[in-house]
Length: 192
Image 1 (spheres, rainbow, N blue to C red):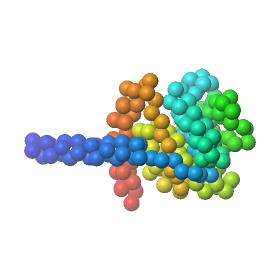
Image 2 (cartoon, rainbow, N blue to C red):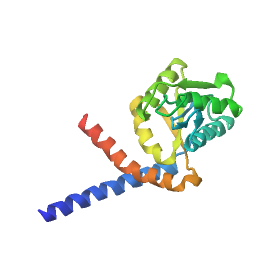
Image 3 (cartoon, rainbow, N blue to C red):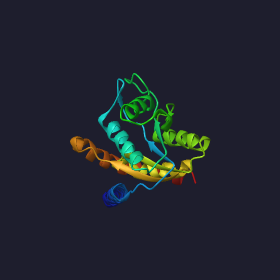
């Protein structure tokens, strides 16, 4: 019985190591390509202000837009607990304050998960006849976001941020993503 338990534990550890390597490899190999839209995945808002992680994502979208890599910026995210406005609204306000014109910003303020962010963003893309997107999130989140984007039917490239002043939170994000990725793989296998 003890040998079986050791084998199962070793197998689970090995799966987590493989998943972690996928998360890290994808994060640091992701390169944005010229696209129709830039999708900024939602993140926490403090009152009416984007959290530091969200600000970094939005700033990355501004940089990509100014480099000519997208025609529109889609901000996504609903209003969560403790948030005075939706993540999408806070994102739009931040973009407008930082030189992006109103006609460039498209909003999905009805989503509460990465899956909903991307499904709703796909609907917006379809309405505007946009075929390709750059998805912006924290680096640790990109691998899982890529799987969800494929499921949502989005032809995407990726651009990630790493917020150095929140180094420990970022490292925790990378560590947390391995089991989340494994869970997603298992769920997809179960749905076959």
